[in-house]
Length: 396
Image (cartoon, rainbow, N blue to C red; front, top):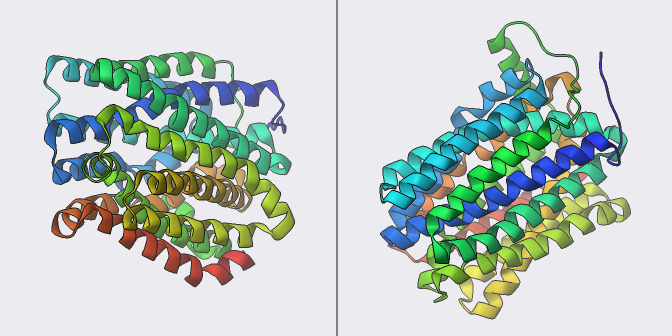
């Protein structure tokens, strides 16, 4: 039997949002601190690229079976267990950094494990979001989640990382571990709601999820756009700390400030996207956000001036948040509730599974050409994607 509370104003959705916010603050600290720690201690594009690959690789090799298992389990339980596991792993990382044992191998292994657990938590959170918000309020729910994600991961987290990294890098990872502990306790206040749990052969269910993504026109155009954009974004993100230090000449503790600029833009994009979609149509607005993202990437790499970099980072945020709100809403509306975990994971595999390719190519491209070339190439590819997929995205 399906239990749907059906409102973003309900206590269950507010509790889920609170837990999401707390864990994302810690994630924001780690996402900034991990590549920054790698860049500062190795000064090697290849080492930074390797850690970035390890961070994204689980979306290719773990996400699909994780989604099928989430469709069999209670989503609240999955989120709670995932938070506790990530708290333990991140705590060990903090100890390794503090004692000087955080080699590149340790950093890569930790990044892989943390993202692997995240694939379970992400699919389960998607189920809870749809069940607690209801179909009629998905735009509002996704807009609110993107706004919370932006404040936690891109504002509060990076600001805390800037202070803590200057004081002691290990403190960044200790704070991340503590955030997962608090979030796990908050999730216990979320109602244990879920659609009918799936049964049957696991392999068949994996195929069903992937088939629905590939054979549904609206989902197929989305996943192609996201796959290409994810490769480019992974390359851009992998080199951000190194580009900021070596090309823009920023001091290490100042680097998170660029992430804060992205967050400011993302808050604007999350607020604008439902309003623009209501007036112009979701498809047209999504194409516009893709084109804006490509232009911002290219601008960042072409003009290595701080004022231009800040402007480009704000545009990164506007475009990415606007796209995320509208693409997530379309995907959720096209997915049956009992298949939400599988389809979400299949979508993540096809959309993000190629991210390690982008992160892996960024280092060699920067070494052969320049750090700025990574951004120009990424921007060109995203811009061409917006032009090529404009019609199917608009029709979807």
